[in-house]
Length: 396
Length: 238
View 1 (cartoon, rainbow over the protein chains, first blue to last red):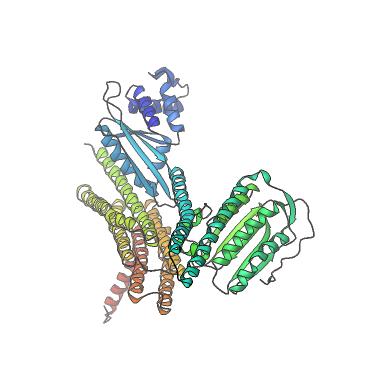
View 2 (cartoon, rainbow over the protein chains, first blue to last red; view 1 turned 90 degrees about the horizontal axis):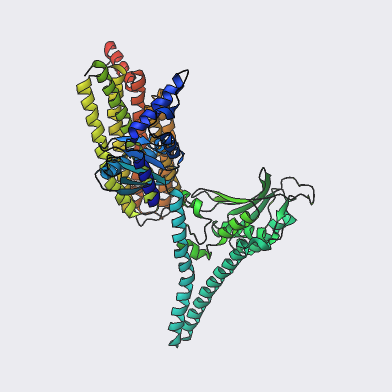
């Protein structure tokens, strides 16, 4: 980035230091060319032998915004990206002031940078850097500012930071607890206390074991070479996945309901799809209130087979929606530990979707439940004629 | 300086005034979203940053006000230009008040820092915030585009925010009745709902001013006409 700023500064400096004048002249020539029946070639009037229009075109082609101020601190040239940002009527208009302030400071010999977070929507982050153009005769002072949309880069940084922090937490917490409990047990003679502590150790070990199992599962799924694509009736997959959670749902009076077209054939790795659907059902059961209903539906849409799992639980805050598929990301850390989740379930679902060339999405609102939809490719065979929509409940 | 130069300078000043209103509006709308996120995330640093950042909004609002007075005094504008400047003057004040209400929300969010809000209460806060930001943005758009259709629709659009506030208060009562929310916190939350609702009212006020800017008519003119009629009839209310 710094190198780019320097290159731009040099490029602008090389253009004889009268960029604003020349740009005006080029645009006047272009205007004249449009209005005159027999246009004079711009290069004939261009003291830079045609290189200036090329430079302007190159700057216009950049996705970075470039703004130049002259020695009198007056803003002159703006490339197309800068114009789009600075003339907008949305939140980006806030950037204007920062660009102006940084350019003026840079004209006075103080390079600077500022990062601005905009809530939007959409949420975005812009980095503005300004450097002086020097006081040589050719340049005549001035400054240049570069505006860069760093939203995606900052998001990636955040994901990476959170992942390192979360994986440390997930692995170190149970290990630390087991170590401490073992140390306490060494000098303990009271049998009731020993029993209580050892039960707690078992719980922590079970938690760690679940995390390691899910990590291994995720690793297997990420390594897509062993994908076994076959055509399977979706009703069988749904039944299989629901069966794994019937006992847990029964214990809390939660109804597991299956609706849609059970005769659809899906092309994919049955084990992986069952695992993905199982994770979605597991979450729905965990985060539903006692006595609620979890609905699994299978329908055909233009993209393929849409397998949806809907619950009426607490829902997910909107700001967390685009992060729930990250490994170890927790919407509510305390609640997740209570329910025994590993934080890897939705990451597994996402990888399964990608392995099959499909996608997973979520619709949710706090207080109103969630609906996760896994879209997978349809098979070519039809195992049996598609049954009509079956809204009957499948008892848990 | 020739008359033409003076006119050009005057119209450039009006353009700058319009840009400043857009900037003030953008800052205010940003504050609504960020303030709400700070409250829901219990982010005290973000809340404090917004409280501190209100000085920027106040400074810009005062600067707009001074520009308006300068233009009124030096250029003696007439007709639509005059109404534009008067409208900008009102916008600066309404937007500054909306930002102040978000400061109130940030301060209230510190008082309810340790309160666990139900998902429904949180969801309604988010919905009110989105509506309040959307209304404010629409008010600014109607000003920039001189769109009296959009401006006069703001009153009806605001009904959604009013309805959300009613639901919010009911949700607070429900949480309070089930002992999940103490009285102090319930009062703080009710105030927060009221602040969002007031931001909507400010947007409606801005819309009325845009209608005035475009048509020269204000809803209040109807009330004035009624009063005059009563006065002519010798009504005791007049």
